[in-house]
Length: 254
Image 1: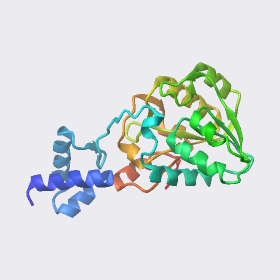
Image 2: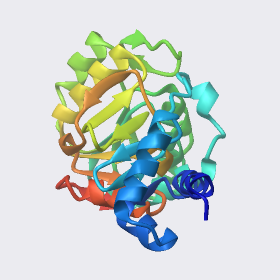
Image 3: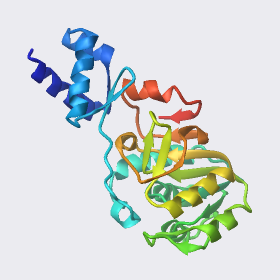
Image 4: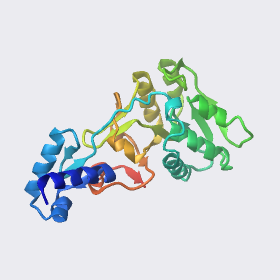
């Protein structure tokens, strides 16, 4: 096989699986690991993947879906799977926080129909509206500064209200997770400060993490991966990403 053909196949594997390992590629293509490393270096220079320790991952992309309205209806199946796993973590009597996140919107829909007896605190308008139906859920809605996306409230006034709580569990939206740099991002700074305060006020906190967000990019870092108790994903990931995940002593719910 020509080197160019091998490299094209490597790019396809990275895009399909999210990650690859040097050792596995070496065995697959029956070439030395050094040859594979050279392939990965060349492909990284072309912007087709990103090298990691022992392998490579997809190139990170910022799609700039800053507003909830832009994200509604996208990747619904993945979000619903994550939401169901999040629901299974709740217990009657819990006080939980649902922040501005379309995955949390799916969780709110499940929760409203679940018969669970919990208190939901939220700063997201669409989540508040979900609970306008007859339900056992107690809802506390926080005000503050209208977010840039016109989908909820963030900023200093919201943060001051959050400080008065101690949440049993918080479920948090993320724009991207960079396992190599230990960064969790969102789009806007005011949203980030509110997310930080939620983390500080929660006994347990979980990322609502579609696996595609391992290859996404946000604009503002609001936490480290190990600031969370766990991450809830819709499915498993490739070996290279799994290897990076093991660096963090948090619960990976797949």
